[in-house]
Every structure is written in structure tokens, then in C-alpha cells.
Image (cartoon, rainbow, N blue to C red; front, side, top):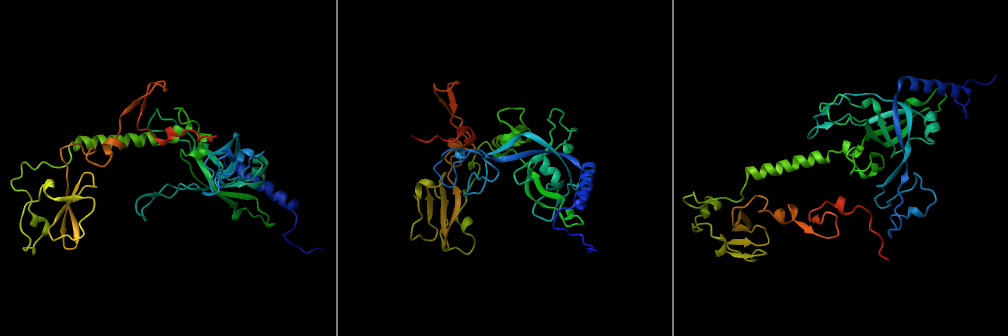
Length: 358
């Protein structure tokens, strides 16, 4: 009589029986999860960079290919146009805020979902891997506060995958596959799924918070311009200008009392003098606006910035008006509109990779 043992080197009928029971449990108690299968990186053509292989020369591009070997990442990804349906289970947790760190952190934004391994391989042709995107219909919030907002499913990207510890049966063969997934954003990697950003109804625009963040940023700038219309200060209503001793402090009576000099009466340059004396003033002209310093002890102390006129706070800062807030328009005959804004984001300037100069 053979000895009784659970382990067997082959998958026997006991294994297949247990596998069917576990599969029925996942199908009965799991939720529908839509799978956007990752196929591999998009071919880039010849770049001349050994770290970015020319995948266009390959007959078949697979998930094993890497777009950028230097950074070990696949920025441009191709996903299967067929959406696969699987059943998965995970423990739903409350989205509590973790106050033990600096700031507020949501500790329930990572999901650990378990799938039946054989069913997953039958439908996908392989196991789930990092790069696959999961779409969870049961997390669709159709009761939004904004009635005009678009209600969409939650999208998660697989970050890691391994066999589940609870998925090993009595015969020591695994039956379950456990993945770690995190929410996706409107990143370049998922453009093949989320659609064209120029399409207002695309998923990319529905997931993106870019426009709302830009509205908030522009509103803050407008508020700053309204609350602080002028930079610098107006000292006409001050009877006595600040004295030098006010900056030096007590116990420095050996330095004569005098008013802070005008910027035209002090030395100026790009670097400080090599042998300064106590109380010497120096105007640094490499700062914009120019900055006045006084030498006390063994350090140069900043006194104030020289603002020639009362201008907006943006105009008094380096490049804020002429570069960052550049609203100029260049007239051209090559564009349909006849004009091109001089300030443009890089995402609109570099729409396609540059062609090789033959």
C-alpha cells in the first residue's frame, strides 16, 4: 500500500478538483475587473542612441522589450484594443487619512487584488504583469456633486505581481495570482488607453486635473496683482529715513550715524570688494533688481532691493514680465491663424520626435 501524502510531483485529479472549487469561489464572490493588456513599447525608429534600441527593426515587439535601457522605462506603450474581463477579489478598506507623517497621506489608494491563475492565463494568454491597466466598474461614482461632470470607472496600473500566499492548496500547488495596483493619472504611458488630449471627451481630460490646477494658479496670480499692484515701497510719508545704526544694532557706536545712501553714491559691481571696511555699502548689479548690502562683522548683510519705480510685483522680479509672463505674439504667414504666441508649453512645441537630419 503506498504511503499517504499530499504532495505529488504532477498535477493530479486532486489538484484539478481543488482548482475548480477555487475558481468557482472567485467567480461567485469576486467583482468584474476589465483588463487593458500591455503589449509592449511603441517602436521609435532609429535614434542613434544605443540605450534606445530600434524596435522598428524587430518583426514582433513583446512585453520583454525595453524602450529606454538607460532609465529602464517604457514611456510609449501599446495596449491591446481588446478589453478582457476577469473576476478578482480584494479587501475593501476605508480611505483614512494618515496623520503620523508630515501632511495628509491617503493610505488606501493601493489595492492588492487576487485572481484565479488558470482562468487568467486562459483569457489573457499570460499572467498579469507590471504595466497592465485595470478598470474597476464597481468604483464608478455616478452620484457626483457636479451633475455636469463625467462619471468614469477607476483605473489602476499593475505595479507588481506574485503568487498569493493564501492561494496554495493542500497539494502545495498554487492557484491564485496576487497583484499590487495603484491609481493612474493622465501620464504619457497610458495615452494609448486614455485617448487624445485634444479630444474634450477623452478619458485623459476626464482624469486630468491640469486645467483645474491652471485655473487655480491663474486666479492666485490675478489675486496677487490685485492685492499688491505695486512693488517696492513709498517712503514719502516717512519723516526720517532709516539710519545706519538701525541696521547695525547696539554696541557699534564707533560707526558713524548716517542715512542709508542712495544707489548712485555707493560702489557697485558684480562681486564684493576683496578688502571691505566695516560699514561699507555695496550695490550688487548682477541681481535684478539691484541689491544693496552693508558689511558688518565678517558678512555682507542685505538691506533692500533697488526698485526704481512703483511697478507690479511680477515686473520687479527676474524675467517675470519679459519671459515667464510673456504675452507677445509673433506674426507669421505659415500658420493658419497668422500669429503664434511666443510663450508655448513644450508639450505643444514637441509634438513628434525630431526626424534625423539626412
